[in-house]
Image (cartoon, rainbow, N blue to C red; front, side, top):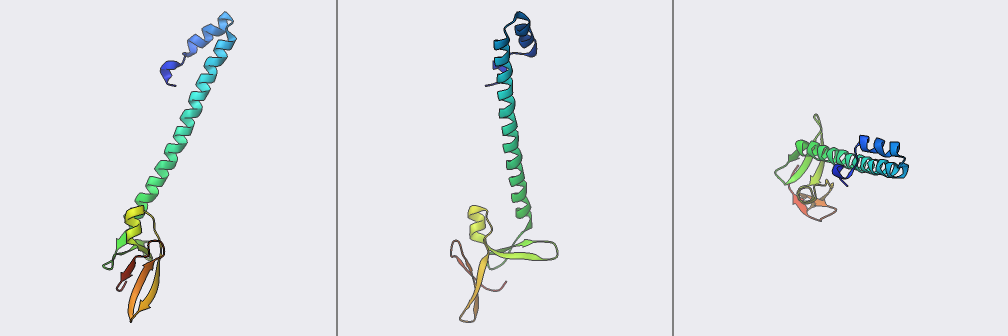
Length: 120
């Protein structure tokens, strides 16, 4: 339903003057439905905007290491490491699990099981 489908306020007033209260009430209900739809759309857009701002904030803080792991820069500290593969494919941050193999540091993603080698 668009604005063109609705009666204007003057038309509704005229219906009431003529005693066509039912038609006037139906027109008012259509306005209410449109307002509710617009409010729902506004809420959806606000949530989408919040999510996009959050994603952009994370992107602005991502630091990629030579070992293809990523960290989040928190100003005076770093948070992580996280899996670069998962971040690039799903835009999600998954922590890496540290282990040693043959004296070498290995970092493994618990989600995609990709292994990263090298020093931080």
